[in-house]
Image 1 (cartoon, rainbow, N blue to C red):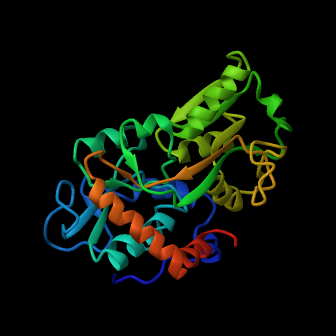
Image 2 (tube, rainbow, N blue to C red; image 1 turned 90 degrees about the vertical axis):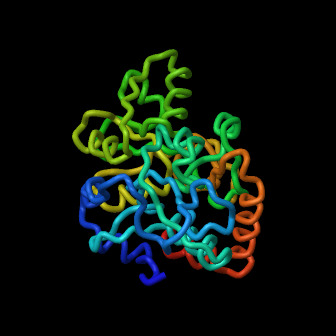
Length: 289
């Protein structure tokens, strides 16, 4: 791949000014794929594992998993893992194609791309429609609030509004909380998570429910925003974060259900980059060790 490694977490936070993640939303144009180690040849949407280019459906921006830096280059944890798996291990070209998350599984099954790699949580509902690779990342649904707001514990959200990204497990976690509150919770769903973050800063919602790593990057770039503290479902885990967790989730690469051979090859590549230490190297570029 012609570009070098993506910036590490410190470089990322330095390079992006406050609110820059929101500006990234308009940076990716067109309907075609973008970036990656793509070459001429089969588009990879319907071909076998020997196709020249694997097209990857992804919801962009979703920093730090997939986003554009100030130079307009597509970077992120998922992008680096794709390079290691498809490029280095399998010897394939690849390209990312921007796709709204709410319809991304339907687009995969319509053969618009070969796989989904978009910080996608493995769950039973999705597994009825697609097959997943072995897990490659652990995440938690969390609650992000304003420091000067009135939300001090989870119960304070009753009667309030929360922001989520449409079609995500954050939206599902909010719906579960809404049920716990016997309907006394307003859920505002946005096409991209940046819309929910903007609503929080503008006091249009009292909290955002979303993946911890993505919310953590946003909090690091915006003063006065913090995770809601308290015990949660991950409290007993040795690696649990020091804030309230609503769920424990595993991310996977999604495949159409007739693509078993390729999925097994990808699983082998994922195992290889873990064994070689490449996975840990990439992880440490984007997340605190």
